[in-house]
Length: 300
View 1 (cartoon, rainbow, N blue to C red):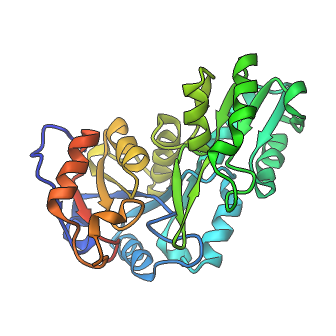
View 2 (cartoon, rainbow, N blue to C red):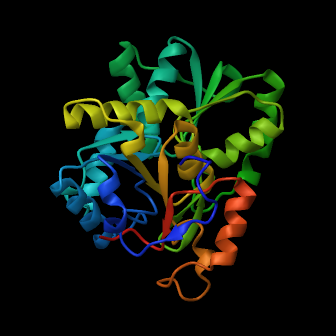
């Protein structure tokens, strides 16, 4: 996403209109390939077609769990194996941050389904992190809200204030603020981390838009391709301006913005039609980010 390009962003109807410029794709998962309940068949078809032409696809997600369970999840939701070569998660990056805290006592903020992250950290470090209550912990690992269907970040205000008073470091395993699960808006770990920073608490972020997850994704792409890949031949695809599009810009990559995901209000009532160009331009100017192109939903 090179900023010296024209600031008018082209809207396309299919990946095939631009895919011949690229050797590798780093594709977001939630909001692009599935909504947490079902996969989007045209999106998988677009990636599978790119791979048949010799391209490499690495799925890159802010899921706060290691990649093996995410691999199983995407297949279970209907994303076919021919649509991608590899997956990297913010959970994978988080394990490295946890290694730096090896031996320290940790407070886990998040749902029980994310405990696989601690199993993976135990394999990496040779010792399982000790999970304790706030008053006994030395740092906090936030993977999300403990019950993201009934809670909001406001429910965590007393806990976050107590952590900030102690100067505890928070590792944020998912920088996303919100996602859609089906049609329901769900708060993520990034919402708690943002509030914790506002309270003066120190936060270490894994995942998009930060560099480590892109470094891992590019390394996996080069491994799958069997050689070096020029960054100018890599396309990042995602639906979040703060994470996917900002992360691509920081990494020096072109980005394709999927407008019908987290920013679906750009489409008004006609979700299948192109986004309102005036509202799109306003969004780009708000974030000072201009992707290479925009598309309502990923398709061939």
